[in-house]
Length: 454
Ligand SMILES: Cc1cc2nc3c(=O)[nH]c(=O)nc-3n(C[C@H](O)[C@H](O)[C@H](O)COP(=O)(O)OP(=O)(O)OC[C@H]3O[C@@H](n4cnc5c(N)ncnc54)[C@H](O)[C@@H]3O)c2cc1C
Image (cartoon, rainbow, N blue to C red; front, side):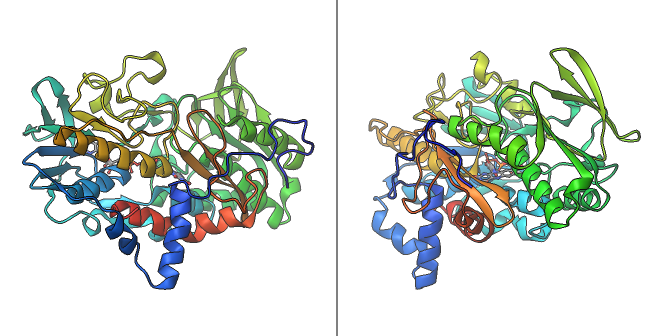
């Protein structure tokens, strides 16, 4: 299906097609092609690698997720003689983009579970603790054991926090029981979400799908879970037994305007999914299977048979309660960085990448892929006494899966302009390629990103 049934509705097909842009998606295709041809992605890297900068700098990275490990990999190669320390108590690594496939039955949970030790660059000192306090005035962080760790340069990459407490009666341990699902928590809970969705597909009834206010990671995930559940019902021949309601806390389904237009038509017209605008989930009673929403007309309580709960998301408390947090209303609590250089706006020896940064868009692994080279290149320039030249344009992407086997490749930047990587895929049309990328290719690209190879 095409986004627009006639050209008077919004954007034409003249998006800025940039087949050569350095996107996560184009690298995934490159990586797959390289793998198929027997060349490693590292072959590509060696020809691009600049000479390492010699330094004795003491660098601390907080967080060993997608961004933290990629930062460590790139800095290890870009600097010669630096002391690099990474702090994170978590040893297990989740491939989070795969959680959507787990929660909708396409993948087993084990497929998204990995170990950080497989990707930790040699020579990097890993402190397996959690940072509880940032003290940027004294160039030090403190861990939960009370240990102070000094630095010359700090990279903040500790992701975000799922705020389940903001929903009265909700607790992540409920996921999988009483008709409650949530794609966002962890692989086990994503697997339990799929079991709850299967029960809903079998029994039918009312399915409520929520989206909280504020920035969330992979803003497409709540929409994908809704559409894949609807498709599951159709495939099972039980669509007529189910009423599907989507609850959007704002007045838009997606920040990218073309995508928003498409979904606003597609949900009610093609999928029979009712949209409830400005409804924020504030409470849940699992025993009674009731959900309460705050609306402009007061609270509204509805019965459900299945509910997809998406909690609000905030910066981790350690950042939110520190001098590193942004005081701009739009990014309150998130790490205050220059949206182009990824350097902290008040502490020049601090940089950030990943979900924790207060940028207008970009809480995706695809953004991590674009931000990390910028943060590392600018930090290396700072250490070398050169001007910072690398700039992040806000690139983000989402293979918006509309059905099992089909989707739309949504790629855009700070200007909310579609910036498709591939000339051969119409960015305004559902296609099998985004599904194949999501299902078969992006995981390998993600792992290559962790190793700093792309
Ligand atoms: C369901 C779902 C679907 C997604 N789909 C896509 C997709 O299709 N495409 C896409 O590009 N992206 C997708 N994403 C988003 C992507 O996975 C994230 O944007 C990306 O993982 C962010 O990387 P990060 O390093 O900032 O955070 P994370 O990878 O979450 O890592 C943060 C790390 O910081 C650590 N940490 C936290 N607090 C502290 C502390 N105080 N001290 C030390 N360490 C700490 C944590 O233990 C963790 O290891 C999806 C995410 C989810 C959940």
